[in-house]
Length: 259
Image 1 (cartoon, rainbow, N blue to C red):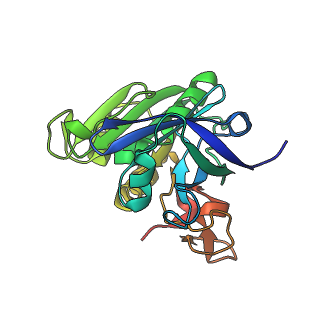
Image 2: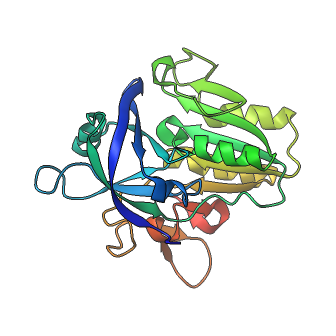
């Protein structure tokens, strides 16, 4: 079985699911049958010569039989074009790429911590954790109530920057409050979001002695490790840097240095 494929895929739908956040669904049986939570796809958002030349990386948000789901925010011309895809349109996809979350460890409880569109890889992870009979608690932080989207997540505790829904403040603050009162034995953290959030999650994981994997969001050009354009500094070992696309995007928080 191939580890990755290159396919022209048919779009099923693309809808705005929260403020400036979109859910794209497309058909690709070849990718669906080999994808794992935490991996990503590299997508050419328009036909050659008619838009951005570089592909854009997107976490696989979920897999439903032969269908793939992606959650993304519009932040530039590439994602703007992707958000305008309609039923029957085609997209050029390479994947799945990168490594994946480790869910076969001996942990019993999973803490998912997501900031904004950092929720993207977690519906897929949640479905696989449920198959492993892991206990799951999710902490999701957003700017405001209009930007919230949590379909596919379970046992969700919300925070918003403006307090319009859930806890007012950072999702990491909410997470710490829960850790102070809850059980932490045989637990593992899975996190994705802004670097500042991940740094804080790493500090919390160390303070409470909890295993922690993070999925890094990074600009990528090739997505295959050729261009060397997505380095992350390593905290130990012979190599000084790893590549997010090739060696990640998932890392043990203890093995990297975030800036």
